Amino acid sequence: MKTNDKAIWNEIYEKENFTPGWVSPGTDPNLVRIIREHLEKTGPAGTVRLLDVGCGNGRNSLVAEALEGFEIRYTGLDFAEKAVGYCRETYGGDKTFLTADMTAPEPPVTETYGVIMDNGCFHSIPPEKRRDYTANLSRLAAPGGLVVIAAWYRPGDRPATDEPSYFPYLYLDEWLLNREDMESFFGGEFELLEEQVDREIYEGLNEGYAYFTLRRKG
Ligand SMILES: C[S@@+](CC[C@H](N)C(=O)[O-])C[C@H]1O[C@@H](n2cnc3c(N)ncnc32)[C@H](O)[C@@H]1O
Image (cartoon, rainbow, N blue to C red; front, side):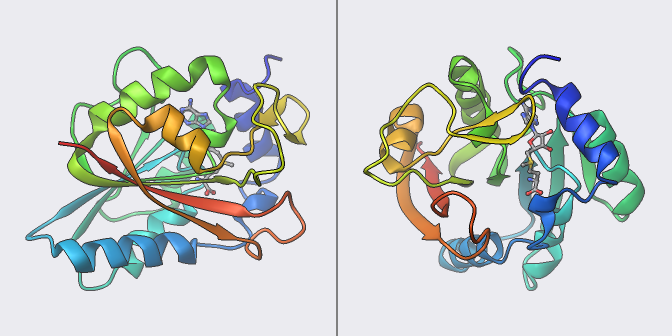
């Protein structure tokens, strides 16, 4: 099997009955809070299009319901078609779930989104594919839109490296990231607004989980 291929994600979802360990916090409260604060500040008129990149089993599709008072149209995207199939069966209503690779040369969808969240997908994108991911993110984010990327935190005393730092499963590598890394990957098209680190949400794993808030320039 190829490391970080969609086959490994499909296998994990199937073997773990679509509830792998990382889903234990349920709908991520940090995402809800960060997006709510942003929407309260910007006061959107009308529907907010929310894209969930690497939506997995769809637990964070419930961010849409948690953002009470706002009109949210949710789209989840993942390259693991088994996970997408599970989401389609599990979450009804007008939520959309797409099978698409965020690192494909063509953008996975042509719409743009006012809010994009990525919980734990980008930190598994290998260095040689990050440029493709960022190109697609730039196409998908509406000008002025918010992007929240949540990833393992890299403390300053841990060197930045192309070698992965965390191996949650056989054939699955992940990287630890901090604001300097994010600025170097996304600095062209995005402004990094904030880095918030939660050391409790995945307690005992790595050195915290970081939420990077970015604004699409333009
Ligand atoms: C750690 S899981 C997180 C899932 C979900 N966001 C959550 O919080 O439970 C990472 C997800 O990213 C997806 N993924 C990884 N690389 C991807 C890519 N290139 N394009 C689309 N999805 C990808 C995986 O299939 C997996 O479902």
